Image 1: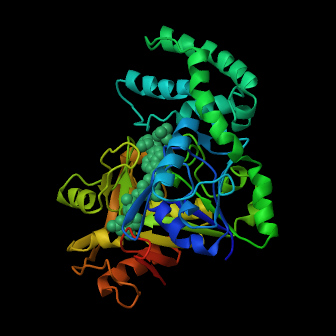
Image 2: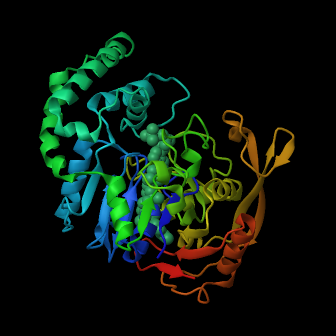
Image 3: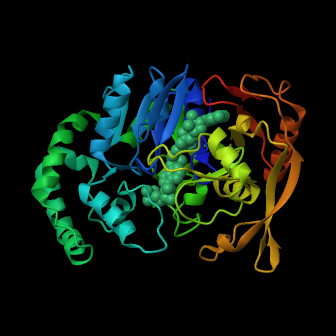
Length: 425
Ligand code: GDP
Ligand code: IMO
Ligand code: MG
């Protein structure tokens, strides 16, 4: 199998984790390249549920190497907790299997406090972040004052960095947010607990990937979030703080762009969004509630109800273009069973005209009203369907229409959360 990038084409939670897990047998290594534990990927294998946030979803397959690339922001305590949780479910997490880039930036306790304090201080225009310190950690990376995983092997250096960072952070905490200042000693106490545990996992991820390829193995690049949460290409400012587009798989783990061969865009059969921000096809009626309940649309990380609506092909088409998607994996098709009519957004009415791409003005998408076409739904339960031919005709027609509108083939169809509930077309 060629190297493959898994990328979310909407606002996250498309079912990337499930598809990574399902494709893992054909690859040698799975690497995360951006985001952090704002991501939550649920994978169900034989009825057993695993929740992965930082650890690549390939960990559930014996013999696969899982790597966390330089582009990821890592909360060291959260990573240790996740390793324990996965281990407790019987999955071995050894330094040979899980490798953390020395260049990855670490989320410090003051990043989490700042993330939450900022959100709490906003009367309006809250982004609805996950509160995991993602944005503040990336800020420090770009400001060149970040703490990196390699610093776990040099605690005196790490402490000096923390002390320097706290000068500014404490001015904000006490001067602006009315919070108690944080001490370097308290930060170091929490770090000391995890540094020794993570040290054996530190690696040169770029060279590890080169070695995997040299041995004839292929690599899967596991994206987090979705293209419309991308810091540059998403619905700014209601976005996350990293580039989620497929191209960042290259910079985010240290591999040449020419090595990104197959780009699978994960498309949920309808649309969801957690947190604030424009969402043209959002439904506030019975159908929205139906999708939310039947799709069990609750955030994995924060437990918030996900906002739900019809599929938005303006959004998907833009992602196909931005990422150079080579095929689509369509997920949660089973959730649409039972709806009489299914709508597809094909364009927007926007400020007096019709447009076929997302508007670029700040939050311009908030002024976009969806132009819909309607298709007949189907009643059959499709959770056990295992072939294209066995799908109801209306479901096949829905998929064929999505292919026309995206210009992309739907090669995988997911009809349930379990690894087995996938149709390979
Ligand atoms: P990710 O963040 O993109 O990996 O997606 P999440 O795991 O956060 O959310 C997708 C949810 O839908 C998870 O609870 C999955 O178990 C579930 N899921 C994935 N594929 C399907 C599917 O085809 N049908 C149904 N009913 N659930 C699915
Ligand atoms: P996965 O990988 C859905 C959203 C948050 C918020 C915005 C910014 O599971 O698809 P952040 O904490 O990143 O600064 O929050 O981005 N968000 C996600 N929404 N799925 C995710 O990840 C998300 N990660 C962040 O809800 O609106
Ligand atoms: Mg998720």
